[in-house]
Amino acid sequence: YVGRDNQRHRPYIIHRAPLGTHERFVAFLIEHYGGVFPTWLAPVQARLIPVTPAAIEHCHKLAAALRQELMRVEVDDSQETFSKKIRNGQVSKAPNLFIVGQKEMESERLTWKRHGERDQVTLPAAEALARLRAEIAGRVDWRRVKG
Image (cartoon, rainbow, N blue to C red; front, top):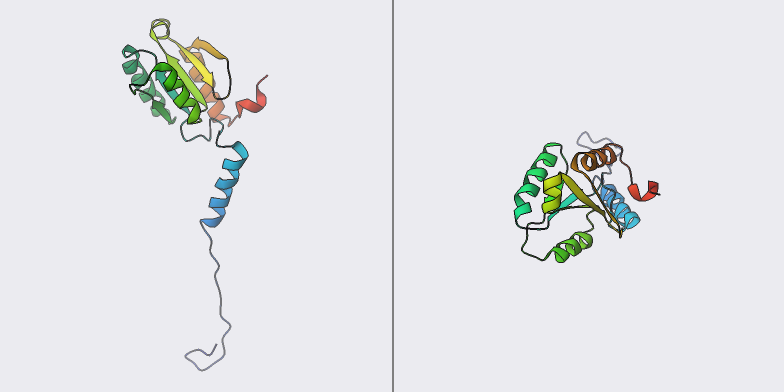
C-alpha cells in the first residue's frame, strides 16, 4: 500500500485467536472424559448427600470446611428422596458422592461412592478427606489407578 509519505509499505497482519484454541482444548477434554472428569478437573469435585434432614446442617459445615481448602463442593439439601439424590449425583457426573446419615455423624465417618462404581466404602472422615486432598493435589485420575 502507499502510505501518507507517498512511499510503498508492506502491511503487517497480526493474527489473534485467544479463545478458539481454548475452546477446542476444552471440547477435546469433554470428549475424552465423556463429561466424567477426574476429581481435580471436575467443576464439582464432591457432592455431599444428607440421608436425613438432621444431617443437612452437618453437611453444610463439612462443605464450608472443604471450601476453605478451595475444593468445589455442593450439598444436595433438596427435598428429594435419598435414592433420587444419589441418582441426581450420578447424572450430574460428580466424581465423588459423600453420603452422610445418622450413623456417619455419630462415628465421624463418611460413606464414599465414586461415579460409575457400584460399591461404596465407609471411612473415617479425616481419612476420606485426606485421600480426596491427595487425589486433587496429585491430579490423579482414580479410574486409571484403581485395582
